[in-house]
Amino acid sequence: MRVAENLNAALHELMAAEDDLYLLGEDVADPYGGAFKITRGLSTRFPGRVLSTPISENAITGVAAGLALAGDAAIVEIMFGDFAALAFDQLLNFAAKSVSMYGSRVPMRMVVRCPVGGGRGYGPTHSQSLQKHFVGIPDLALYEVSPFHDNLAVFTEMLERARPCVLFEDKVLYTRPMHAVPEPFSLAIENGVARIFLDERPDCVVVAPGGSAPMVLAAMRSLLLEEEIACTLLVPSRLYPFDVELPDTRRVFVVEESTAGGTWGAEVAHLIHQRHWGRLAGPVTLVHSADSVIPTAAHLEESVLVSERAVHRVIMETLRG
Image (cartoon, rainbow, N blue to C red; front, top):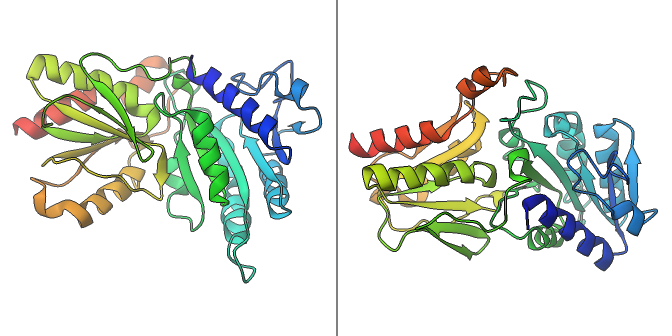
């Protein structure tokens, strides 16, 4: 099963299990089923609870927050995550604050799905990774789709939190198979964190969200075969609030596609410094995209986005000195 099919199956199961769950977004109804076909078949199976809307990210998110405030649940699809910025006010000033500002905790079961990321030539307005802009908002949790986490479990966890959640979905993952790990690495899931590892003590640990994981895995394989450097990769399903158990290691890297400056990786590095500084050989190393808009031309886009080659080079240079 591919990641897109896993997402679609998860939404079908959720809608069947919860008759107070609504799904809203631009062109999510059949026969289109969303720009990436994640919502295919849902409007036919659940008429009246899957609503295609005009281009109105702010309004869609506001309606979802209203449904959640009234006791229902809602999932919103932002067609391209770049436009989640238009819904930022609803998330920051309405949905997230509604959890706690009425004198007692108010359950807010809503999820905003955001397809993000470059590598497809969509240019400056359809290729960003906006995770860093949503980090640190009280009562707003951030998740990211990965090829290793079953999405029914991820959606269930988000709705059970009873707080607004944003789910980032890297577009390059949609066609990738679920749970595929290259040899000789093994995969384990522990407390919502996917761990891809070798049967030996790693030279370093890499923390990366799901969209960057395939690139990091490719770099880990070439580092092992060409440099005899053993890496362990940690892929958290929940990006914020962030919490992972760090294996025994003296070097940590964080890889993400967001552009430089105030990144999610900086938050991760801060937390790891607080907990583990005494046993690390140096600061956590951040690997991310350049401080730039995302160009459309393939060769320019490649020069901006973080790459397998950059991950390989930074890890090798840091460990070899």
